[in-house]
Structure formats: C-alpha cells, structure tokens
Image (cartoon, rainbow, N blue to C red):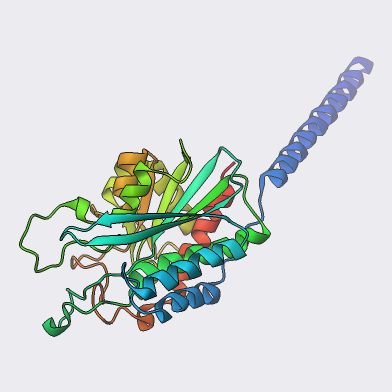
Length: 330
C-alpha cells in the first residue's frame, strides 16, 4: 500500500511539472505573438478623398499643359511635407502619334537606406481625350480623371501622410508615374501596341530613381475609387506575383473588404505593372476593377469621370488593405 501511495504521489508531482511546463510554453507563445503584432495606422478615406479632389481641381493633368505642371509640383510638395525623400525624373517621352511629352515621374522614399523595400505605384496623369464618351462630339475633350488616375494617387498620398508618423519595418517607395494614359485614341487607324501606354513606368522600369533598385514586391493602384467595384486577380499579376495577390486579397477579406476584393480571376490588363514586371523584374500586381461588360467602370474615359464617380468606401477598402499589407512585412 505504501508503494502505491508513493507511485500516486510521484505521478502527481510529474503531472504538476508537465502542467507547469505546458503553461510556460503557452505563455512564451503568447509573448511571442504579442511581440509580432504591429499596430497599423487607420486609413482616413475623408482625407484621401480631399487629395483626389485637389488633383481634379487642377483640371485635366495632361502632359504639356500648365495644369500638369502645377499638379506635379503639388504632389512633390505633399510627399516632401509628409517626410519623404523626393526624387523627380524629368524626361521627354514620344507618344504613339509623335507628340513629345514633357513627363515627370515623382518618387517619395521612406527609409531610403533600407535594402528591404516595397514599391507602391499609381499614374498621376489623366486621359487627353474622352474617346469612350457616349457623345461623339466630346471624343477629343480632355477628362478630369478623378477615378482613372487621381484615386490611386489620393490613396497613396494618405498613406504617405500616415507614414510620416509611423513607418513599417520595410522601406517604402511611393512612385507616381506619368504619361500612362496617352495611349492611342480609339479613332486611331494605326497599329495597336501595348508600348503606346504607360510611358512613364516604361522609363522608370529601365531607369529607376536609384541605381540597382529592387523591391520585395510592388502594388499598382489604378481606378481604385469608383462605386461598387470588384477587384479580381489580374492575369499578369497572377503569373508574376501570384503570392502577392493572395497576400493582398486574404488581407482584404480579413479586414471585412471581401466584397471589394473577390478571389477570382479577372483577365489581363495592359497597365504600368506590365513594364515594371518586364523591365524592372519586380513582382508587381495591379489592383484594378473588373467588370464583365468589358469596361473598367461606367465613366471610364468619359467627361463624367469626375468627383461624382468617387466613393469613399472604396478608397477605405483599398487604402486600409494596402496599409495592413505593408505593415505586416518583416
């Protein structure tokens, strides 16, 4: 009987030690988890909306116009105000029709000394012609480009404002590329080449603002302020950066934005990311709306792409998702 009591007592001691060991492990795991959780700044859609409006207030931002010059200065000044190291690339780029465009790529860098980086892109110019407008008389009228151009820039300016106060582990480059939307007019009878589009990103991809520049990945924002969009996996983005697509779309779903970021294929789009992937070899995705009808959104390349086309809910969904992604990288 004594032996049995001793065995029971020993078992009790052993069980207690195991329980204490398990408790310690759980506590250690909890501590580790706590250390890796990063507080992510809250994106402000009202603020982003005002940055979109500020661009639209300049009028159409078509290269070779005063509105284009003035808006470019505004964007560079804002990035500097928000604590970024600002670099401008001034370059003359020939358009499809021979017009020489005085273009300007504007780059705002945070933690420029850091080797591990993420690149965020958006084009800041607007379409010189409303060649998709229902009224054919307006097919040569420049557009305001509130959604197509200004929305992505507005989101990135708000991100820049937040980065001024708090920065993620990786360095961030906010890159406003120019002359994206000077592609061939719909009435043009010549050849249709993808190189006619995204002239500024083609130049940057071949001539980055820092020699030997590289980034872990890139995210392009295009037309990210419209009403009721569906952002799907763009085809080339899937081929070159499918893991980044998954990261962004899963993050959006976790944040409650799954109705915006639909985890389905959305077809191929010729956009800035094509040339960033091709020439800079940086795996870059395109967050761009998908519509089964074949057009990007109702007022795409029309005179009605104005502030009435902008929805703050969409700006919030995109902005907070991108913020969460960049702050989750280590």
